[in-house]
Length: 98
Image 1 (cartoon, rainbow, N blue to C red):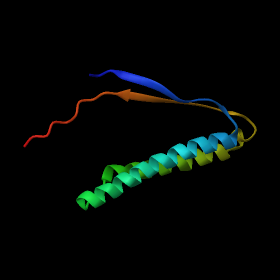
Image 2 (image 1 turned 180 degrees about the vertical axis):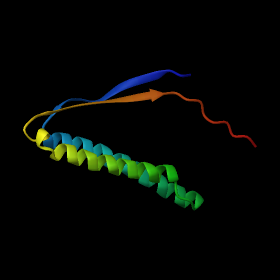
Image 3 (image 1 turned 120 degrees about the vertical axis):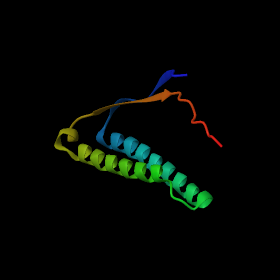
């Protein structure tokens, strides 16, 4: 049950604007996912989803870092090579005791 799979999500060279568009879109979508998850939790249980709220803050921090990287002089006059791999690992579901 501990099998891991890997899939390539991004693998290529991009202009500064292309790289910014691709990466910001991915981060935005992931933030939206967690916002919806938190909203669902509030609607269903009346409680916020603390894991999602924490993850939103982490992702927003990463977006700030990304902006800084893309605005750095080193990134201005070159192509940017981006590689992103998705790793999938199967883990057992926690058992619920009654």
